[in-house]
Length: 437
Ligand SMILES: NC(=O)c1ccc[n+]([C@@H]2O[C@H](COP(=O)([O-])OP(=O)(O)OC[C@H]3O[C@@H](n4cnc5c(N)ncnc54)[C@H](OP(=O)(O)O)[C@@H]3O)[C@@H](O)[C@H]2O)c1
Image (cartoon, rainbow, N blue to C red):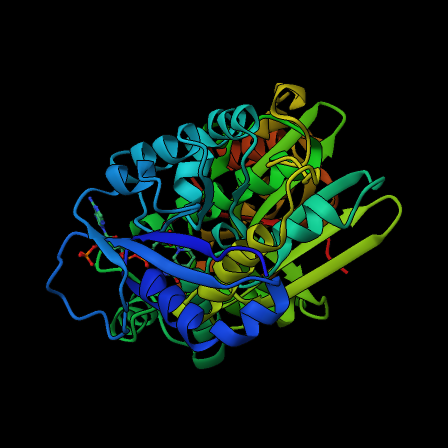
């Protein structure tokens, strides 16, 4: 039997401790599957005294993850610290430069430094695996990188943040406010004490930037992503969406268009009957549309110790099974130097249907004025109705518009015009409608 694969784990929190536990509990099975033993030979975290709830056996402790990354006592460096700079970046870089394979679950790190790290991995002839970085336990990286040769991707989109999906699911199912659902998510451990990163879309954007690179063979450009979070979604939106046959989801969408590649993260209305609309709670889902395959939807657990550990252990096992001379798929599907610069489609040119909710003064002529602003901007309306979605009174009413396909620029201009006309009593709400099967 080949020599044991020696693994060093940096970070022993939710994911790191779970990985150590799975490697120990499933040691015999992994040995059979990989044809060699996989042993945890080194670990690093901040607090050496903390009980991790797992027997780390004879693993050597390192205070400094960079020193662990460089030691000759490991073959694989597993980064589960988190963050796009500091110890996670310096240790992953050091490990690759020292010729160690790397496994990471860190989307923030890859969104920022992924291409440079891929270049180093290629130069050193080592693997950089990151299945857990996008949609936790769902094997979407492997699917896109290894199982879709010859396919041209036209669009990839998904529910990539369990916290947001949990909040939106409960808002719809129980009629609760955004704030109440967020508090519950925090109490149950689904949301951080500072939830900004999740609910404002940053986490989804990091994951989307990686999917975009795999889908279109482009260099990662996370800073270009158009981003809106879910904090201004109200019960009025959820109810109106339901009445119109839609459900609201926070989606990350990357799409090839005539003017370039669109990358956007925002609340989206998807048809209630579509498959992605059935993805509830903390579950994640990724839909990939290609010219040959059509639409593929993968869904499953996107976070949590065990689900994430499943993806990390799968990555470690791939390294254990690899044999010298065997050519592996490049980190982002193509050799790093062949990843094309990214041509960004401006959000203004985004084409699609729109839901617009307006709270207006209850007076004669308002409907006509709204319809005129739409017509002036060449927006064709599927419907315009007075709706009981909002807090209607004798003085104000809710008007819901659904447009046929139009552009973001036209909708912004029309809504600006309606705002200037002084008919609104509250901020207008605009939610994009996404085509989904
Ligand atoms: N949690 C999930 O469900 C999930 C899902 C997918 C991906 N991920 C990704 O997985 C990574 C880890 O997440 P997590 O939830 O496991 O985080 P976590 O529970 O906060 O654990 C972080 C670990 O890093 C250690 N650490 C922090 N600074 C360090 C340093 N300077 N040197 C060495 N160790 C250091 C901490 O040590 P101490 O314990 O001693 O403080 C802790 O063990 C992140 O990149 C995250 O985005 C997480």
